Image (cartoon, rainbow, N blue to C red):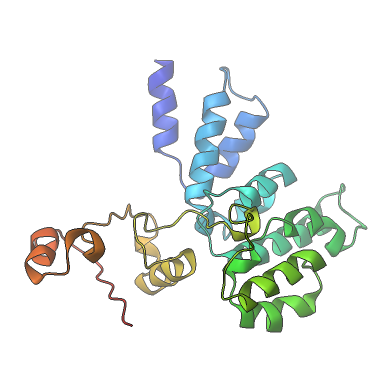
Amino acid sequence: VRASCFKFMVKTLTKDSVTEMMLKAKNKEFDFDATDLVSACVEFLAAKAFQIVKTEGFFKFDSDIILQMCKSDNSVIDEVDLYEAVIKWAKYRIEHDEKYKGKELKEVIAPFMRHIRYTKITPEYLVQQLKPQGYIPTELYLETIEYFAAGSVPPEGKENDELYRERAKMFAGSTILGTSHSYQILKWLGESYMDSDWEVIYKGSRDTFSTTAFHQKCDNKGETITLIQTP
C-alpha cells in the first residue's frame, strides 16, 4: 500500500504542488521515510525548473534548494531566467523572511551567482544587461569574456568545469537545440505544451536526410515540430 501511495504522490506532482510536497518531505511531516519522495521531488524540480521558477511556491524554497537548482546539470531552464529568478527569490526573502531582513541583495544572492553558467548567455546580453547590475563575480565574468573571445571554446582542461557545462535539454536528443532555443519554442507554442513529453522521432544526422526516411519516421505521429538548421 505504501509503495502504491508513493507512486501516486510522484505521479500527481505538478509545478504548483511540488513545493509543498518537497517541504513536507524535507521537514519529515509524513508518517513514513520520505527520502525517496524528496529525491523524486528534486528530479521533478529539475525537469520542470523553467516552469517552477514562475510559481508563487518558488519563493517558499529554502536557500539549499535554490542552490541545488543552480548547481544541477539536470535543471531545465534558460540561464537568464534562472539568474532573474534567483534575484526575485532573494528580494522576496529580504522582504518577508526575518533571517534575511536588513541584508543587502548582493550579499544574499552571492552564493547562487557563482553557479550561474554565464557562458550560456549571449555575450551581448551579458555585457549590456547583466554586467552593469554588478552581481556577477569578477573572475567568472572575465573567464566568460575570454571564452567568447576564443570562439566559445573552453580553456584546455576546463571543458568539464561547471561554467562551461550544458544543462539538461527540454528536447533531449536534439543536437541543434540548446536550452535557450528550446525554451523559446515552448513560449511560442504556449502554456498547454509546457508539460508535454517530447521525443526526437527523426534526426537527419542519425536517420539520413532522405524524404523517405523523414516520412517513415514522422507520418501519422500526431502533432510534431520540424526544425531545420541552415548553413
